[in-house]
Length: 134
Length: 131
Ligand SMILES: Nc1ncnc2c1ncn2[C@@H]1O[C@H](COP(=O)(O)OP(=O)(O)OP(=O)(O)O)[C@@H](O)[C@H]1O
Ligand SMILES: [Mg+2]
Image (cartoon, protein in one colour):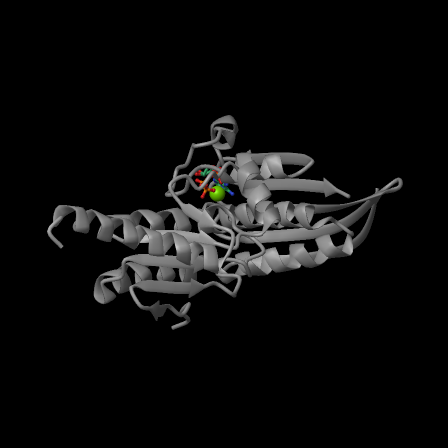
C-alpha cells in the first residue's frame, strides 16, 4: 500500500471540526469520489472529529490518500489521548451516548465507510481509522 | 459575535444557511430563532439548507430541535432544499429527521407555511358561520 499524500489537522477548537470537514472534502474530490461518496466521507469525518474534540479532549486527524494495487482510497485516522472507552461494543451501538448526543456518531460513521477500525484503552486514549475506496 | 441572519417575511421567519456552521454557531441559531418566534409572534419558520453540503448528526439534531421548539411556540417549521447526497447520507447515518417538515424548495416551503395559516383561518370561519 502506497501513501500518496498526507495531511494533518489538529483538533483543539470546535472550529477545527469544520477544518476536518473541509480538508476531507478536498481530498475526497482529489480521489475522484462521487458526490454521494464525498458527502458520506465528510459526514463520517465530522462525527469522528467531534468525538475527538468532545470526548477525547482534542487530538489529531490524519488524512491520507492511499493506493492499493489499482485502487485509490481515502483513509482518516482520529487519535486522542483522552479517557478512552471502557466498553467499545456499547459505544458502537446506535443510541448509546454518555453525553448529550444521539449516540449515532460511531455506528453511523461505520455505515458510511468501507473499513472501520477502533482501538481504545482506558486512561490512554482512542484511535479510530476509517477508509473509503473509490 | 458571528451569527446567521434571520429575515422576517410577514408572519414568517426565513433563514438561509450559507456557511459550514461550527457547532456553537448552530446552537446560537437555534436559540436566536426561538427568541425571534416569540418576539415577532411568527407563525412559521423556513430554513433553506440548499447550500449545505453536509448535515451531520449535530446539525440534524439542531434542525429537529428548532422544529420542536417552534411547535411548542405555535409556529410551523419547514426545512427546504436538502441536497440529494445529503439526504442519502443522513438516512445511512441513522437520522430520519422525524417530526421535521421538508419541502423541495423555498416556494414549496412557503406554500406549506401559508396553508398552515389558511387551515386555521378556515377553522375560525367555521366557528362564526354568521360571517
Ligand atoms: N474519542 C473518544 N473518547 C472517549 N469516548 C468516546 C470517544 N468517541 C466516542 N466515545 C464514547 O462513545 C459514545 C458513543 O459515541 P457516538 O459518537 O456514537 O455518540 P455521541 O457522540 O454520544 O452522540 P452523537 O455522535 O450522536 O452526537 C460517546 O457518548 C462516548 O461515551
Ligand atoms: Mg459522536
